Image 1 (cartoon, one colour):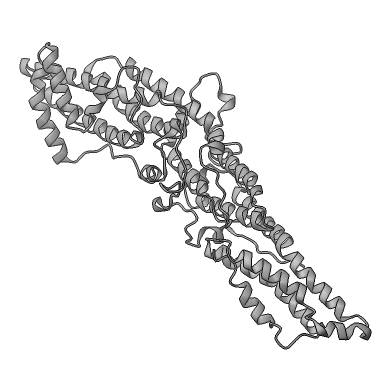
Image 2 (cartoon, helix red, strand yellow):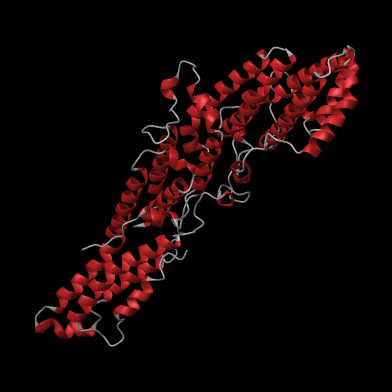
Amino acid sequence: MAMHASFEVSDVGGDGSSSGGSSPASVSGPSDSDGSSSSAADEFLDARELRRRIAPLPSTSASVSVLDGVDQSMALLLPAFASPAAAPRAEALARWLAGFDVGWVLEMDAAGSRLPRREVGRRVRVWAQALSTMDRVFRLRHREARNPVNDAAAAQLAALGELASASAGAMLKMATAVAALGSSPSTLLAALDVYVPVSEAYPGLARMFSWSAAAADAALAALVDAARRCVRGLPASIRAHYPWRMPQGGEVHPCVGFWMGYFRCMLRNRVSLYLVLAGGDGDEATTPALAPGGEGGLVADLISRLEDVLEEKSGELAFPGLRQVFMLNNTHAIVRWAVRSDLAMFLPPGWARAREERMESYVKSYLDVSWAPVVSRLTGAAAAAAKPAAVSVLRRRRDPLAAFNTALENACSAQRCWKVPSPVLRRVLRQTVSEHVVPAYRRCVEEVELPAAARTAEELDRQLSELFEG
């Protein structure tokens, strides 16, 4: 009877292998030398970008020393905004923004010019940090300017409002530019990253300085529309975005770490994602909800799409059993990514257990395809040993286990090169193969007259323990 292992969540989550995980350092993806190419719609999103995006966005707080330095720079620039002349204001605004390393926002046109390749992620982080610091300084200076109330304070408050308004208008160009990007996975991450600081800073500043937030509202609406388009396009992106060149050792495909890391990045701004998915554009039916622990949620749906593509592409691995090892490796990695991160919050009850049962079925199918034909040679050897004495001389002239030995060496030679990155999974799979083959071999050698050079059952077990080294 075929023996196969039971996979528990504790096994799946605790092996410390490098095939996936929730640590920022374990995010995997395409390398510069893997022969892949980024699409024009998603040119800046790669493994390095995902590693950076896993980390939290810059804090909205700023140290006292930083605020003091910014406040001093503001004091030098405010006189320009007390004057109606456009030229001094433009020069002061450029200096102000350059001090935050965001002077480039002035170069974006009102329609949202396309950002430089592989620069969006970096610029969004710098922009978010700059906006949060500006917001903090404007609030502190506004509080100081209101007390005491006199003509000088009123003039300073008016100039401060002009600077805040000009800064807000310039910084909104970033939101407009992100919303104008194509419907790609990277656009979604950038849109969520920009949505948060705009929605938090602009309403308060507008009330504080008594200017309209209509431009900010329009930018937020554009970001919502862009993000919803990107969410609806994610299933197609999973199938087409990543180069689907199959690993010939059956190991974890790089796309698994890439996409599971992407889903984590997406959920980092889960509140904004809730708002985006709840926003109305008349097409809610085609956009899955972000449903924690529920059926049919966005995360569960996207992981299922990834699993479907892996299953489909595994058909390209023609060697008997390699397809099952590939699916076992990749399912194991997906479960580890999910149960060891906040992705688990958004998956329905029983999700992990269903994958454990699926892994058990992969092991059983692997044994049936790879090792059942090898073990069947033992039945032939035992049957030959039971034949009448008339054929015993011929039987003694050759190894009765020759067919088994040939099949065994062929299987071991191929599977020694296969890869099972997880130490726990590799140990379980080796043990399962041994329990399937060695007892049958031991029973057969007890019935068959063997040459003196025949291997022992212990030697066979050691040979099988070398499988899956890659």
